[in-house]
Amino acid sequence: MAKKKASRGKAKETLVVGSKLKAALKGSGKKTFNVSSDTLDAMNEYMYWLVDQAQKRCEANGRKTIRPHDIMA
Image (cartoon, rainbow, N blue to C red):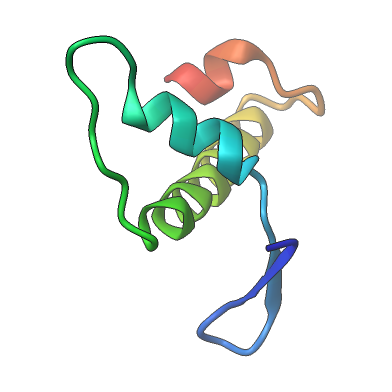
């Protein structure tokens, strides 16, 4: 699952570790959740969106260094 084909024909690298993310989403203890197969793809797309937003905020502030608040904004 290293690369995924995007709808525009470009390959997107997977930014999340599937097994770790799936384990975190499933939870543990008394309450566990099932995780559908397309959930990891959705999370990867969300990660790309977060990266894009952080880059835009950084550039808008005249910086070249992305800081934590660029991601959490």
